[in-house]
Image (cartoon, rainbow, N blue to C red; front, top):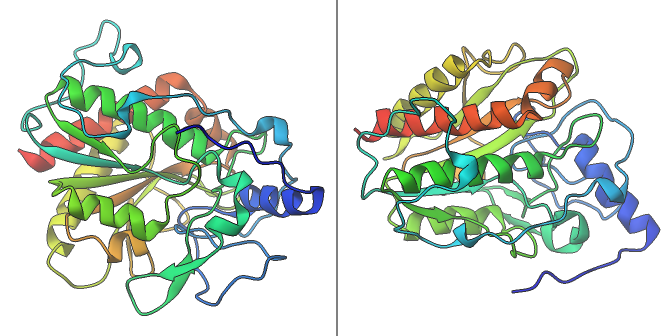
Amino acid sequence: MRVRDVRLPAVALTVVMAVAATSGCGGAAPVAAPVPASSVPVSEAAVSPSPTPELSPSLVPTPTRSPSATPSKKASASPAATRAGGAGPRTAGLAGKTIVIDPGHNRNNFQHAAEIGKQVPDGNGGQKTCDTTGTSTNDGYTEAAYTWDVAQRLAGLLRAAGANVVMTLGADTPWGPCITERARIGNTSKAAVVIGIHADGGTAGGTGFHVMEPGLPGPIQAESHRLAIAVRDAYRAAGMRPASYIGTDGLNPRVDMAGLNLSTVPKVMLEGGNMRNASDAAMLKSPEFRQKTAEALVTALSTFLS
């Protein structure tokens, strides 16, 4: 369906834009209380403590249509999904498997403050906001643009390996979906695995990635931990260091993440780097490194599933 073009009043737009400057994906645990319209909503993956200037509306990326929002059995990769002259990632064990890709946030969330600000269950007795705009680099490259790009590259590689790919949102998804709906998609798809893609918004001095995994005891905890290790090892081999400011050796068990708490299939969420750190931001903004990220995730999924 066509994305509705919404123009917010100047005050409301300022509030929504401020979220991108402060919502990280992997810092302190969020607040469960309802969020007033005048305050910054808490991210599903956490909050950055360091405010930065508001983003200009001109920096909000324009969505482009992609056919990959529904399950696919095609085995052909998009042009962007193939490494030129390289051997490519490991793909053993991927053929015939259903893999759900969950790109963090939505590039249209800036225009839907009311919808994404509603409270939903967090799977651990609390409440969280439905979704947020995510964070951004200091020069305005948004987390949502990053996660969408990596997700498209990953989807192409997985389809080329014969996997059945399901996306939690498409290019024409107007906002969200809520974190509860993202979990439901993974569960009802009977997925072998769900991989969430995010980037963090920590303090400027913090660098590196971390992999969030379920912290609550349950049937998927052990397998999700094995998946987290596979993602950690493959992504570190791609060139990003484990986070210096959060988690332990690149792993970060969480009990406050609805997307993890509500999942009934193995799931982890990669925080690909700190968008507020200059060196990390340069890597995350690089198309070549985003391709390496997608390839690392394919290798990790192959390791886990085979």
